[in-house]
Length: 124
Image (cartoon, rainbow, N blue to C red):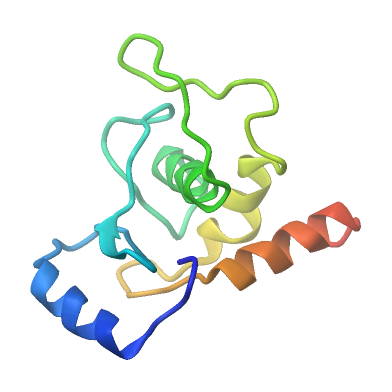
């Protein structure tokens, strides 16, 4: 996510052996699965609608993007007040719920930053 696709990432992605539905982060350190910090569901990530899986995905993408480590409480990671500079529920509604279900997709750091900039300036 942070750096976007580079030619060597295709080789790393092919070698990673990821499973369907897994969300991968591609950055300067390589290709790794996005960490799931469950709050809305322990069932994993989803997209293309406005449910619990997309809510966790939106939050976890933003946690990774802004390098925020959430605090665990019991078995869940409830959002701390002002843990992110933007509302993840808005990101879920504007971006994650509109991703194509059952298809590959990608988001870059630049796209996330552009969305956040638009939110800061009242554009939706």
